[in-house]
Image (cartoon, rainbow, N blue to C red; front, side):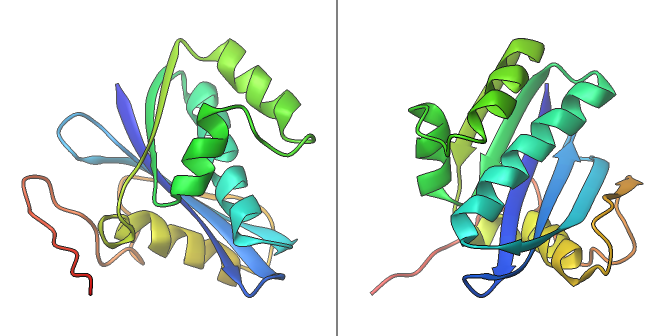
Length: 156
């Protein structure tokens, strides 16, 4: 199984947006990192939805048919789990489900999704809408989650 952490980022609502996905193997080693500028998006939610769709499409292209997708957007994970997606995304989602053997989509804390956040910000700052795909860890990715490390979230 391949695990992908995804994130969508928008500089404002609406604003210049990007998506990012960080693919890892069972040992937590980087397989692939993708970032892409997706133009101006009306909401952060749409950037998050597109991040998941593009992540799954890239996994299919690579032949990774069992995928665990983790996002820091609980609302987006809920929308995929209950088939409550925008109407124009539904055909893409149905195609993804058809092509994959198994897809798990779960949510995580924003504090533990730092590599995908960095990739999405990299995409938003790109000048073109062509996906930047790098095998392994790209030079610009300087912070990432570590396996077997406890991360804390403090609330009031």
